[in-house]
Image (cartoon, rainbow, N blue to C red; front, side):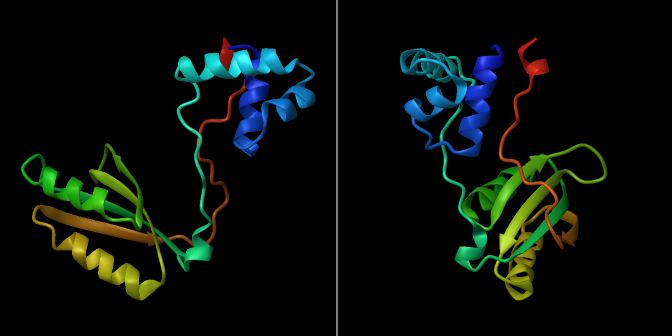
Length: 153
């Protein structure tokens, strides 16, 4: 991956709907060269997917919370993971090291709906303890790694 690939990736991260022609004109490379590079980035697994990021405010989901969960593993892990995967309000679930086993990013309507979801999570067999923090504001919200020249070395 070179600086041209990184430029292409940065443009696509700003707008995944950018056309090959638009990218070509912005980085001063021919359309066919941009197209070839895109194919290589896709086939090489560097571009994993093109996706749509939906603004949760338009779905009346205005409250974000981070929940940490300690679970009696591995006996109860499957039920917990099944619940997590079936729950749309849980955007991210990370298996972590430390005092807790999992970290969840939750986006929901309000404190009432958050409380309902937390009660469902706490009712899952094997949950030992939880800790929930409500997000007041978001300082940075990236959806993938931003490539840099160090990435290409």
